[in-house]
Image 1: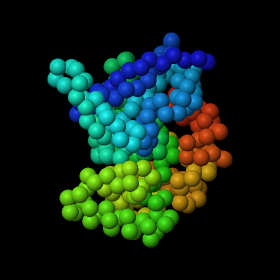
Image 2: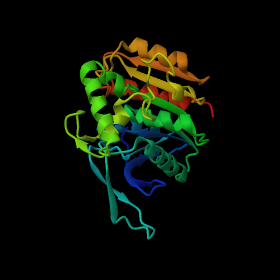
Image 3: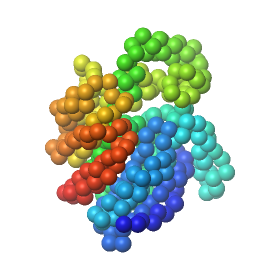
Image 4: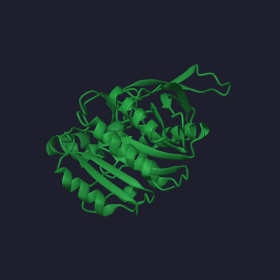
Length: 296
């Protein structure tokens, strides 16, 4: 099935303008999926996945939208809306500089766009760091517009980094020193796999930050934000996820035993990587089939 995308924009409450894509079926219901991309991603980052989502959503009578968020690309110049309605101003953000808590504005803007198009039931699907963002949003807001949350590849940046404990401890000490001495906005070239400020790296890698929602390896206060989500939840994990520091079955079990949702499902898609390479169709069908089956 061929689908046609519209190029659209969503404006956040703090006036950022995010570009995206939107598609809706000829016989539309009231439900839509909002895709939230991961670290350094973009709304068009995986054309195969986007096309599959659009096609499968159309079969189920659901709309589909994907937007850039303030963590798109490494360093990004993002337009801002002025009171006059023009977008002449801009701000430098991107994955290397974003403040994680600001992601609630991005998620809200995507939901608001879909509601403005006539869709009253939104299913959030976040991949990788996008999963952190939709988990944080759903766990900390009581938004009646969302009817389900899918966490795709909810793997901890902090725990995967700790496979080299000596390097991890050195980085954390260095980041703390930079932040405490007023140099938190310093752009670092070798701390992470892309240029990143000390504050942003701390958010990603330090324990107990707002972003550290997938702390499945800790001994206490495990998945506290995740547990607060009471609406339907789907967790999809990749059998060969290169970012995981422990067996996927162990990670899955931790999510399974800490959910606060009475309508919860988790699945490991075998023989695929963090981006579901080679199993894109299986992943998309698992998500869209689940989303379409939710009882409103």
